[in-house]
Length: 368
Image (tube, rainbow, N blue to C red):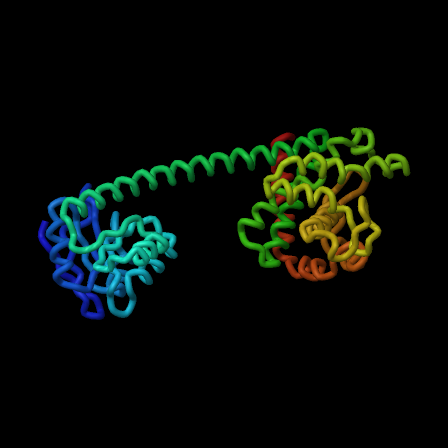
């Protein structure tokens, strides 16, 4: 196909053989010397589309709209040398997988070693042997295609595993509440409140999502509590209460058997979500900042949801009354800084509650 000439804003000429629309692969040549460009272009053009940039700046401009299958990069260039440009490209998530071959007159072992350290897949010294160049270009394009296929397969399998893990976590969480539908709904409402508060604290999306999955397992230990105690429609006796207080350690014992970060967070929450800021909680009597932040958040969200939803032993509280209770118990039960944050998130909290109330009403209509 014919040659197209384009000029960038700095006067560097970009020469592109053909368009990147057919099955032919595209090789980008980045070199400031006309003789080198002509030689590489003559060797490559019969088999590849060739994109040419005469400076690093021009190359970056082209790469905003074109992703070549391979880059041939000179080292000795003005302004930004080849090593520096390679470093920029490897730091770009969109471009980092493009194979780069240094083509240079620099022949020392140190130069070659540095090229590989920067992320190049090959290092070709001048003068260039035509067959060697074509062979290496072909090999590295083929390898890059295989690597891309492997990455896509890995991403797909990882997504499938993540979906399976999420489903397993939900089933595991709900196993603890199999005989108590109210507890099941409570877990997921409470998790939404936890995620809202964690995000407000600046946690990144990955950490928030992991926490949202871990939080519903806070009462996993209740799977070991007798049904007669768990669902008693009255205040528990002292002996029953002592049995109920064992569920944090039961949950921690179950969840800590996995070394996966998500289950480690879940085990931490399960063990500590009944600790109190003033040190009078259970099972360890931890106080203040000795209580893990994850457990402090769950403790607050857990109580708020328990107060504002009807339970077997009480009617629901108005949101304002629940806020008053939480504020009264700042520095006693709850982290005072978290209490302040939580109250300020009123609109988000009410939105979550309304969403769950609406879903519950919908379920009741369907069942009726």
